Length: 239
View 1 (cartoon, rainbow, N blue to C red):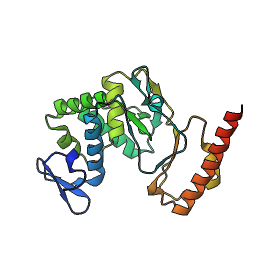
View 2: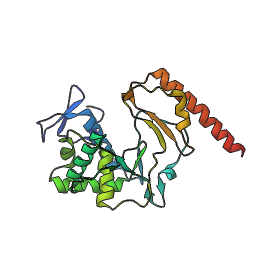
View 3: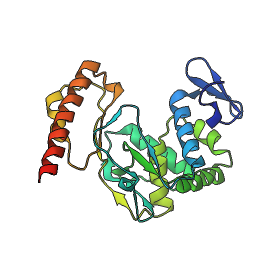
View 4: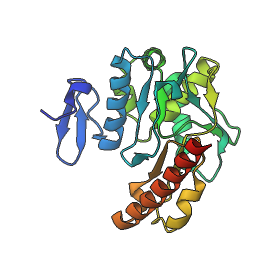
């Protein structure tokens, strides 16, 4: 059995090429990118913890943190970058449209739009469970089938739209990721400058694998960051 099959419905059959076929809707195969998001949603929905932290495989933690970093006064930290999605981000716009369709929320023609994708990404499992029930009520299908039938989908945008448009926002909302990110799909060249982007509040860094940045460059960047953060921590301890 495939390692992740325990988080997918039995109607999902793994086939070669990092693809699945959903026997409930077998017209199009389910790509690995979509299946990965289904697994994350199911994993969080099963959790009985107060907060679950989703971490991209390209993320490296640079400072210690605790559950309190993402959970305050009974509320889970909610990331919202106000008006960060513009016409130059067509995939993000598409993810917004799909999320609104799945949740039965009216389409939004205004630009710019809020972005909710961040790493690390903190989710409230109880919110995820209610969100998935909403998808089933709106679509009349199991949520896995409704999501898997989409060619384009972002779990982070779905969660964010649900929180803002259905729940009316979260009391504990922030506009900082706590992580310095490099998303561009070209190799990262500013290795020496990367450490200077980090603030005292950042706990992680991320250089996307899609950038094609070499392992040697990644290691140089992380070494520079380690030296910078180590000096910063030492200085704080001395004051």
